[in-house]
Picture 1 (cartoon, helix red, strand yellow):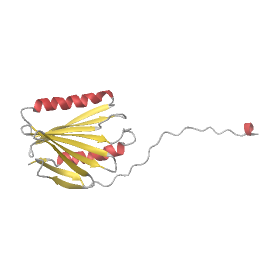
Picture 2 (cartoon, helix red, strand yellow):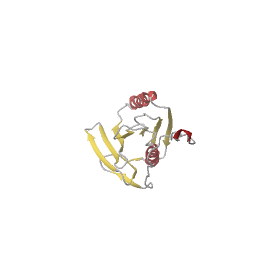
Picture 3 (tube, helix red, strand yellow):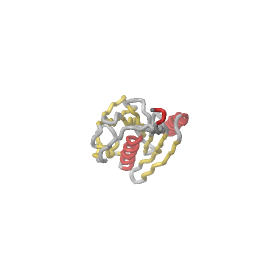
Picture 4 (spheres, rainbow, N blue to C red):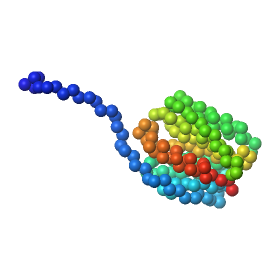
Length: 178
């Protein structure tokens, strides 16, 4: 009897991911005496400052709910702008192996003396989906990279990456050296 019944052909469903709801973007001013710059920072992030002597200071912007972290490192320039820019270029080129696409965009704000390069690295297995550096080209250099606190599948966390990308854009556009 079962063999004579009308057969239903089942089709496999595509793999899905949980829906990720992100809060509305809200910003506050980030300003501290330890660092020579200010910018607008998301209100729900947690910031940690880790001085590393006179040569470098780390600023970690944590997204606890998303298990993501923007790692910013600041260092004063000592005639090493070219070396730092090459080091950043090599960092981005390391990701070419896993990236489906790498797009770069220059940033320039002559009024605030902020110049930089923003790199978007797209691909399922890319460890750092976005990376940037900012400088005044004479005294200051800041680099930033997005990391997750787990091995990401960028297809599933793409809404988080897009959300943080917008936060980084706000940060860059409101960035000022003191």
